[in-house]
Image (cartoon, rainbow, N blue to C red; front, side, top):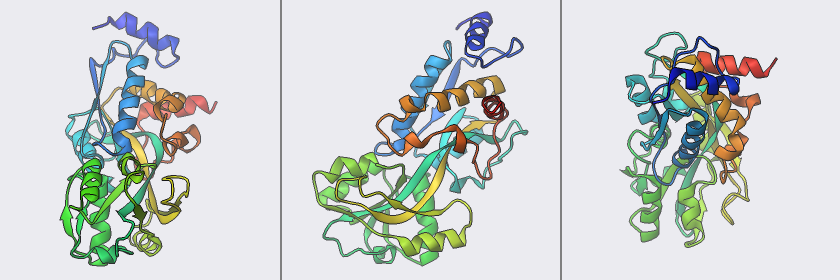
Length: 306
């Protein structure tokens, strides 16, 4: 483990810390996502960038089921950082003061809700999913949370399956699923991987977007998946939700300041290959909804606005 002096010299060179700051943690664990979703790939790139920014700290990306699981792991103190969509966070202790709480490093990019079916499928709306074999994403994922919320609003009861998006894509191709729902950044790896091999269709969801936004004001915004996202699959009307990078409020402010600086100054490296994630920027970074900014993140955002 590096000495306290070595860390302080490195941090001061980066303009992140002051001589009174404590030594960095020996390990920093970032909760990400599962195969076939942007969280896992983006999280791995972020962990690599943080490893460079925090020499002497072992930064580890931990694959998870994504948003709901990440919130739980943060609340319990099992991880230090985590990626999550905005909508499933109301059950957490969101606080920039309580050390047992969770706060935000910043807003990153948006997740798009996508209903993926074979091109010749009779499924045209969410209501058509009743009785169909449908993946709602992994247990404790943001996809499962939002899909369940929408299905409950509509009174729709599919033959629900829970699995990673990559596995859902494979089962759609094999005919073991009729559809899968995915709520992540675009282009979504699970969709891209099969789009060139089998005919697919994204189901237009304009009415569902309005219904969800009316029932739960705040996080849900009607959007369109651009026509250029997946070869011939777009455009497609749906809804989106912001994604945040979260931190344990107990995590030292000097460390979170380095994390924040890395996210927003190394965004090109972190988001490489993910056009939607390339929208990470300082201007929208503070728009974290009901989640307060961590003290370290607030300190960094203030410094760049001087």
